[in-house]
Length: 346
Ligand code: ADE
Ligand code: ZN
Image: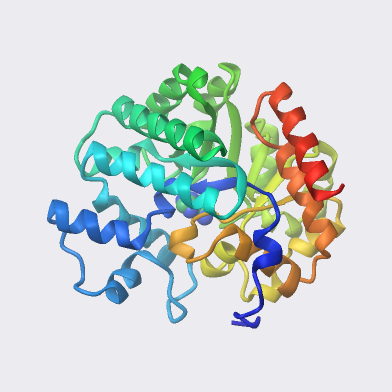
């Protein structure tokens, strides 16, 4: 690690925070996995340390997207019952609230959660929605849900997820996301589905320019009408697409540690986030998969200021930018942005 790991996190913890890009499946507590394994007879290594190696990126791991995605293959074994899905959703909201996150957009992958036990997609969606709403109310944190579909999985299933998501817009389901293996799979099979989802009123965010080239950011903007870009850091490889993104004002959901761990950047200090800000792009700071990456959003804010040398005031501005790019309805958003500005003295 580059930074003094003992440097106080307090300053970053104290900031009211906004998280736009967090996957439920990448947020499971290790202790909860052990409980689930004991209760449901999932065979896992007999020590936390060895379990961690299967589901969390280790310093000695190859920093590649295949290694990163492999963690999710193991994680899929844990979604054994409705109670498990309720619990992991509740805990994901609790962990965000504990990190002083005021608004969390939590994305979940219904196909991943339903796979192990063959749960119907509509049940899985109901369980996540119910638990997220209950936890949000109890903990006084705002939560919006986003349904994710993976590029490397079936477009037919994605279509079912999109229709179910549209039916649940009144229940706090605010958007749809295209995730998964961007290096080897194009977005084309999903164009029609995502366009229809947007027409139905769902907001749209697309993982692009993470493991795939800058042109995927153009594809997400021009062909899919993305309102936000998941990661998008490789946009910096093409000036004309930087200009397009700047002109559109699209928000980038940047996840610094995840980008290092999945091989997008060779080292943290080389992360292009400061250059993205300097180029006038609309940049927000997020975790992606806090458990897989073993981080919190406070840690990511610290990395951004202390390793990437982004001024603290610029970080504070990015919190406002995140609130402005959120998928809250306009009235709620205006109130929320105002309250954050007051609290952040901006
Ligand atoms: N699913 C979970 N994390 C992801 C990432 N960083 N990119 C694409 N799909 C993901
Ligand atoms: Zn992601």
